[in-house]
Image 1: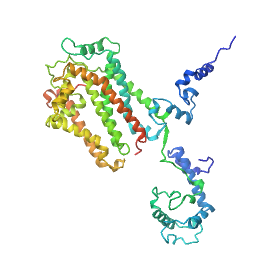
Image 2: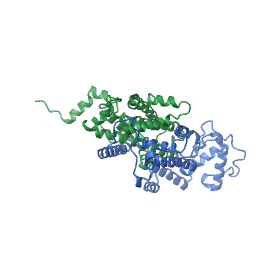
Image 3: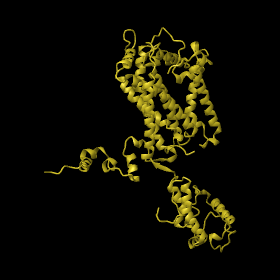
Image 4: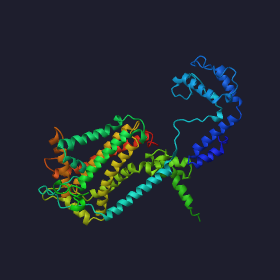
Length: 272
Length: 255
């Protein structure tokens, strides 16, 4: 895009102050300058293109009498009232509906050509969705490196202070009381106390895994915003709370014979 | 008397050498030096085999700690820590048990007493493993709350769930290897749960344990699964997972 185009400094400063990226601010300031210029002097470009749109390129799909409210001798765009203009846009959209992308860029085969209406300086060509991006190096790599070092430091310090458990030699004839699974299966073990093993031990976890895998195909709500997906968020949160409660119960509230204990009274039977 | 080459001359000589130019691709910053320009920033990411897991540019909101909490990356890093510490531990461990051949347990004792840094590395391996289960689970929650499993990322969610299950299996198989009372009985409980599988219960249990009861065969079986088979499968799924992140348009959002 050509440099040295006029920009609206005030809009630019305002956007920068509001934390927009330089690129976005520049584009908007440029557009604002063009808008201002066009408002000040409804220049000949617009006039001529309006005439061209009315005479030179008759829109095939235009409803008959679509131009009536404007009248034939409409001078320039600036002379239209806001209401008239809105009506005109409505008509254009209704006529150009099969355009597909709805932006009126219909191309040669399209029903209507609106591109010439805008002076070249005001056209911003955006390919794909405009996104606010930064370079992976150094921005992302640097923060990833910090995260990596933090984890490593934590691991080394924690491992120097806390030893992994190593009990007596395995003895298949002498079962400890209670015998507990690793902590990530303690929710499952807790569930086994309430239901038949075939339900709690296999069927339920199986259904859960299948449900998780199928989730994106079951939840067809396209929105990513939390306020639009309250049901999904509620169900998942309940699932997490349910599972977390079971795991914590199985870890800290179960003692010898897997009977209920209060950890602050009877002690903790839990190994990592 | 010939002039002593300056550091700059030496550097240029190295960078122009055939060997150096064969190692670093055309355009690499190690060939032409790094200046802080857009071009060199792009090349730095593009010409590095590790960095180019990422695209050259990423969405700005993805940098925020409060968006990802770095959970997926942490899980991956913990996997690398586990691989490195695990290789170290393999040097000092024999997966043999049974009367008269309690090598596994003896090796564990040796590791904690006689091997330099043995105890530290074993601790790191164990705590990383627990932490990885946790971060993977939290990563899944994060992805869910951001709705990041929605089109076009449905399949990557599926891969992610498989990775979580593989992580659990890796943690569980590793749990048996110290061959102490804690390990044995945790696995007995776990295998009993698997034995309740409808119809094939006994078969599943037998397949898992390599016998009717937890014994030396189970140890060998789970050792091979733990150090070779599962990490291999996990790595493949990890590769697909990372590849799909890029193909599906990078990180999801912003919300």
